[in-house]
Amino acid sequence: MIGFFSLLYKVLSAIICIIPIILTMPFGDLPKTPVIPNDEATNAYINEYLDPDISAHRSGAGIAPQNTKMAFETVLYNPDVYGVDTFEFDVQITKDGELIIMHNLTYDATSNAVEYFGHKDVNASELTLAEAKVLNMGENFEINGEYPYRGLRGDDIPDNLRIATCEEIIDMIEANDNGKEYRYIIEIKSRNEDGYRAADKLRELIIEKDILDRTIWASSKQEVADYMKETYPDMPRSADVPEVIEFYLYARMGWDLEDADVSYIALQIPHRTNILSNLANIGTRKVINYAHKYNIAVQYWTVNDYEDAVYLIENGADCIMSDYPDMILEAVKNTQE
Image (cartoon, rainbow, N blue to C red; front, top):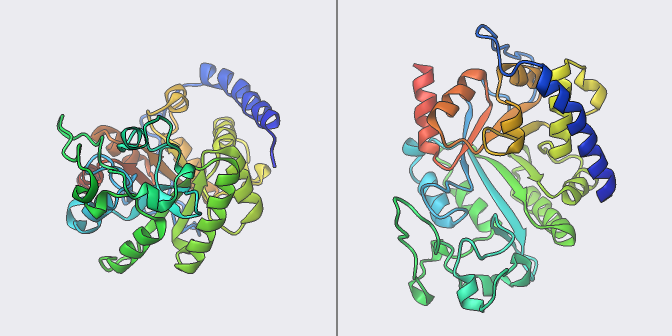
C-alpha cells in the first residue's frame, strides 16, 4: 500500500518533471497530424475511428437528477435520442453494507438530507439503506432555471428518485439492453476502510452479474485504487492520478511506455474541466495515438460542449462521457457524415 508521503512525493516529482516540458514544448497537434489507427489492438475498448462509445456521465446528470433511477430510465428507454453505449456512475457503501449509486461523499448537495436529519455532512456510510431511502435525491436538480422535484417528501417522492442500489440498476439495464451489451464505468467514491468494503462488494457484484468483460472500474481515492490493484489485478481498470501524470510525461517525451510496466487498460481523463487539462491539452491526436500504440483506450470526461466533443471525436477518442449524451450523439452523427 502506497503511503501518503510516498504518494505525495511521486506526484510532486512527476509535476516538477512536467512543468518544464509544458513550458518549452508546443501545445496541441500540427495541422496535419494524422490519426494513426491501431489495427492490431486487442483492447475491446479501443473503438473504430469516429465511432466512440457515448457515455451517460453520472447516468445523464444534465437531463435528470444525477445517479438516480430516473436518469438511468431516461437514457435507457430512449436509445434513439441518447445513443448510450456506456453507463458511467459512482458507488459508495452504506452503514449496513449495501452498494449505492452516489457521487458526493455526503447527501447534502443532492438531497434534502440536511433538513431531514438536522445537520450538515450526512455521510453515505453513516446511514443504512433504509434510512437513505427516505430522501429525495432530486431535491436540488436544476434544469432551465427550475427545480422540478424540490419539496417532494414522504410518499410523494417517486421510487425512481430515491437512492438506488448498484445491483438494482445493473439488473434494470441488463433486462432492457435494447439488443446490445452495455458497458459500465464504475467509480468507487468511498474512502479508506469503507472504500475497501465497497471494492469487495463491487467485485462480488460484477462477477455475479457476469459483466467483468464489460466493466472498467476506478477510484479517485488513492488508497482505494491501490487496494483494487493489489487485491483484484484481474479487474479491468483505468489509470489512477499518478499513472495519468506518468503517462503524459512518457507521451510528451516519446519514451517507451513498456518501461513503465502499466497494468491499466484505459485512461479516463478530463478535457477542459480541471487544472491538469487546463495546464496541458491531453485530448490531442498525439496523446491518443500514443495511447493506442500501447493498446490503451482513451476515454474523456466531462464533455458538455459540442465543439469539444467534435474535437475529441475527430482526434480518435474511444469514449466520451457527458451529462448530455444526446449532444454527443449529434456530434458523432455529424462527424460521420
